[in-house]
Length: 113
Length: 111
Image (tube, rainbow over all chains, first blue to last red; front, side, top):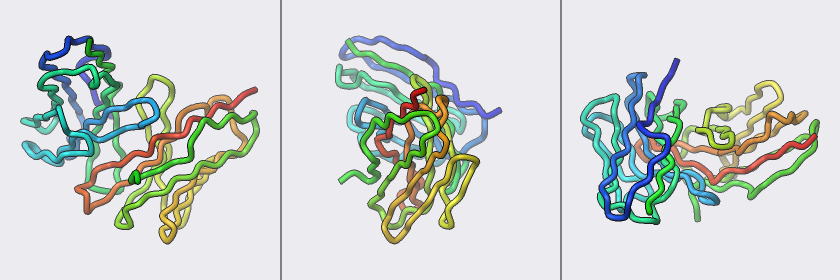
């Protein structure tokens, strides 16, 4: 069974903290994605990676960075958390460039106080 | 203009109704199209891919009109269990394969 696992379901962090969100997939997929989901705005792409050590900015990369040192793991880093980064964060992976299904993790609800 | 735009919701329909969702996309180079379903507090999951010739899966029918850059999803004989948010998704090779999501349309099916 396909599996994308995010390290935390719920997270509360303080403003200014460095935050790491981890995502692991066990399907040997090439592509991995980080989205955030906010009411009325849908899923917005933060970063994606199509190979180890490769990354591409999505639509809203400001305030975020990513790391992909191994194929199965894609980390999202909030360098200095701010309250406007309170959101649901969703990781996904897919096997190819086009015409392929993306599989999502269960999401991390991050609250920055 | 957003790359992928969907009908605003929510749609409130009775059981047994037929409901249609529409979606438009702005990138004419888009190559793959999908409908995802997201239940409350859950992750999105693929409902169906959308092919140029149109495709059907049980009560669900998806259509693609490349000339108008328009995608639709038709749900016939709605069930209570169809209540969810439906997300239109577009994928373009010239954008490195990234998946672009619409904002979603919420469907609520009532008894």
